[in-house]
Amino acid sequence: MPLISRKPSTRIAGEFHGLNAVWLLASALVAACSFLAPSDEYYLGEPGEEGGGGGRSGAEAGTGADSGVGPSGGQAGAEEEVAGARAASIGGHGASASSGAGGSSGNVDNGPVTCRSDFADCNHQASDGCEVDLSTSSEHCGGCGEAFTCKGDEACERKKCVSLSGCSDRTREAFLPIERWPRIAGCTAQWPRSSLRAAKTGRPCGFGHDVCEVPADACGVGWHVCASVPYGPAEVSSQATQEECAAQPGAFVAAVGDQSCEPCSEVGDGAACCGGLCVQQNGDCIYPGMTAWFGVYNEYTNLCGAIESDLDERGVLCCRAP
Image (cartoon, rainbow, N blue to C red; front, side, top):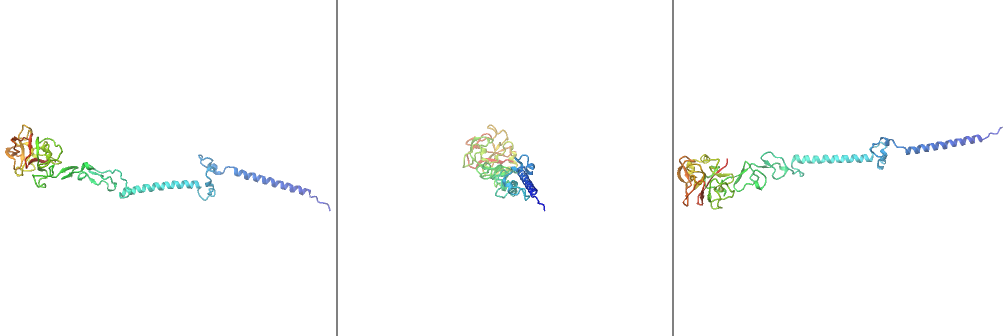
């Protein structure tokens, strides 16, 4: 029986082991290359991101970004921030709209309110809107604030304070009651020699109170000496008959002459007068042939343009402007 040599099998085994070593080495190289090569995310990442997907935080890698479970940690954080900002924005606008529409919220914007004509937001509270009617409010007559407050017996009419009595001392002595004579009044007063057409100084006065600087000061706010320019004698005759004029207690002068209405000067006629203490001179100015005169004081003949008085029951005839 021939002997079988084992040498060839030893060679084959050696070759087999050599091949295994080569395959193992090749596999190791392939595995190493796979770790070193950039992933698909690297090439699919945003151009502006440094390193593409590989530049993202380690938190992204640890949240299963490649597992397909959900968005990465960085993306989730950014989306949460955007969502939070939107919610805050929506919530803020919603609160503002609600408070502004209702006008009763504690967060009401107290900024300026746009009002239609004759109304104003004088308390600067948007919750009650334009709460003041400037045409009738005695506290805010024609405007907001203390400067527009009507005083004493004044009422607000068409944005202007107007005296109800017609006299600056708030006491009417002739043409009563006021309801019967709303636009003509007799106001007793004292004043030094001056013209019945002299402009008001604005200082209240009256008989038994402060002496008036000029006759017109005896008239209240919104009133003037009757028959002054441009109103003329008809301002008296249209409101009172000659009999009603003569029946008033005292003597009250108008800003026209008794015989002739003009001129109202230091050389013109005596001042026209209403009242039982007037002197009837049968003038023609206010009531033709029946216009009375204020009379003589301290031997001085009172004229329309130069008149004085400090006697009781004498004063000025005041009329309310239309």
